[in-house]
Length: 415
Image (cartoon, rainbow, N blue to C red):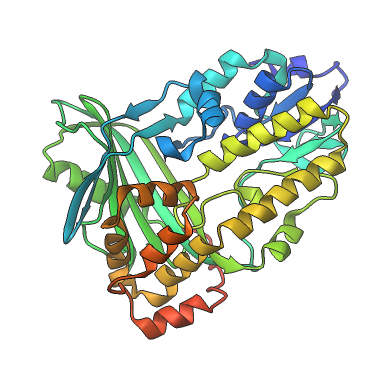
């Protein structure tokens, strides 16, 4: 794409109703929702990379999304499995019936670029500064706007507590059919050791059959530190593929380190990154599942809410939009308090090599309860059921974790 079409030749970009900073999942879905449901809004989506969505794969259960959110995703070519998914633990193997969906970032980019007007997207444009009146790019270009939404990446804070979900996934093209018909959301029968030193961590392998001969295999672990040894993870994935008889070539790879938030002061953390008059969305704005780190259901809901607001109140100010998003973030923080408590149970009450028992206990419960858990809509009976029965952790440690504010994030630079 020729980004020069955005300027008037002097380096100055004409004013927009809204500038969305960050073309990842949250920013891209906001742009899509505005295009479909608030066509009068002159928005611009600004992304530092050369493609929208980065290099990721987002997955979710079909029941995570409400009807309109499903409709918002209709334009994407999704991988889907209606026959359910499998989980495997040392003492538990089970198939659950919930349909599962997955979206690759390459398809996210392709679909958005095909649907959004060409002049609404600016790629390769890194934001140097953001303020209530617009964005200044690293090359000095100024983009003026009536409103700004900051959808850049999550930034760890000393005011938040928790651990990390670390993963590396590889897309294999197999020489012969791999034989899978359903995703394996968690295969926790693997060794429960982090890929650095001898530190234990809850570890599992995640498998998506993308076609009869293509499979995505991801090695994931929950750990106290944001460390990744990519070569060790690649070796583990290769061993897993060999054990299952999958021979072939790696055609793509992705990796990431996601926060698993267990507590802290949301107000203080947001104060560190809030820019007066600028709205926050996405993981940066606090919109993720504290335990699973899933973001897509919340990103879709936020995109639709913002589009409805701007369609109904086209004259709303930037300060009002910022307050609207901040109020949604506060409600989300309150609504997900239960999941943060479970995160504390995982990181503080369970010994690292016993964390697998916590998940094994959870996945033995009823399928509908599991569905509501992932969607962030657990009922009070669900919450009680998760905490009843033979406790998977020592009761004194569980009580301490229950009343703890969480372990502050360890934010060392990943290896």
